[in-house]
Length: 364
Image (tube, rainbow, N blue to C red):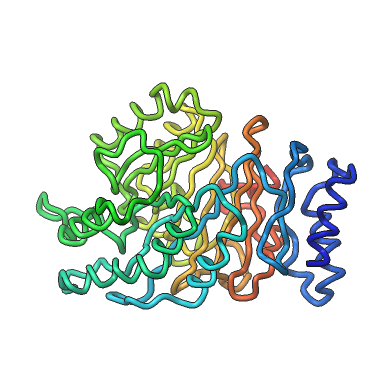
């Protein structure tokens, strides 16, 4: 814990104007001289001073905890029908309580469905395995779990006027609406839970939409606008939206129609209209912290199978977990992202400066 104590002394000793990126780089260089390519954390220039301290699992770089801390993970699933999870998933869930988050958010694909030949018993077994590996440990640690449904959880694909994977949607709904699986959220609207819903935690309004396909129909879109225009949303200090598919593509092989939202520009305009701060997504299996227009975009990396290369990058695919620290007054978000194989930090400066019209977050 040597460099964690030194961090605390540095930050509380008055060097508040120094960015955590540079401080973290110096400290980690002293303790890990051969890992310079993985040790820069993306942070703003000013850190809140209201008794916030550096917190992380022992031996890891410890970011300063904000007014609200969120752990963000995504895309946990393995092959179709799998009831096993990769070691990085179990490692992430085991370490999560030590970051002391107020909430964990999952960007979808929690189980390995989206195959019509899967039986009811197989689908139920997948959700049971998810409960053992992910949901139950979080409940036991009293960490609320916010999530969005992914295409492998309960795809909203429609064929002939019916859901293509109706059984998967029914069983996903049965799992999440079981009182024994209460995710611990302060719901605002759960009439269509778990597919789209809203909740509020610590002055932040969260809207979850069903982006398990690339299309959000008009009925849901009307709900989105009404929700973002509601008193709870307006009175919150910050508004975040979570969906599985991103608004814009960021990884190789997922930059094809159907793998990102069909009307990304229109959806972004709606989110900006209601002063949404960040859109959090998964599906692309690549971590990219960006900003487009007034909207921050947290593209979450995968913890399960198939991490992907970012567009405009030769960086090897990485399995990641992101700790988001939020200052409510300044509305600043600080990302600290770990490579979950090595537990080293992701160097934001190795990520592309831009992907299409998305600018890297630290440069925007």
